[in-house]
Length: 131
Ligand SMILES: [Zn+2]
Image (cartoon, rainbow, N blue to C red):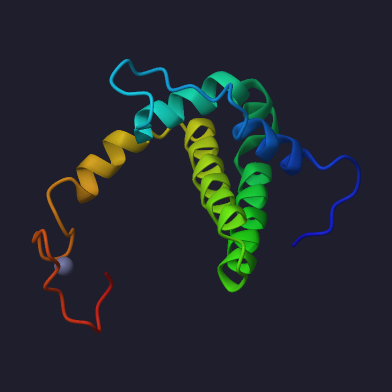
């Protein structure tokens, strides 16, 4: 975990993300949140602050959250682990907003038709290759 000075913005943000006010904007379902819904919602909540911070500063927050996910994966607290996954994807959506990348479009383009390497729905790429 990074040591930072001053108020801990990440903690405030994480707490905000898990309040009952986190409602999807889609009318489809209340218990399913699509990537597009998430990115829209993150934009509504944080875009002004995120744009002011910029990609570099926001990337540092993502890295901190990834570190916290690593710690949670080694622990036994399932609730905390779920929160850390949520934080990582929320910060990823945040950076995508600042960098003006539509995550749904990007994901559809790259993974929507199967593995980008072999085009299969069940990957048949050699294990020596990524993915
Ligand atoms: Zn493949």
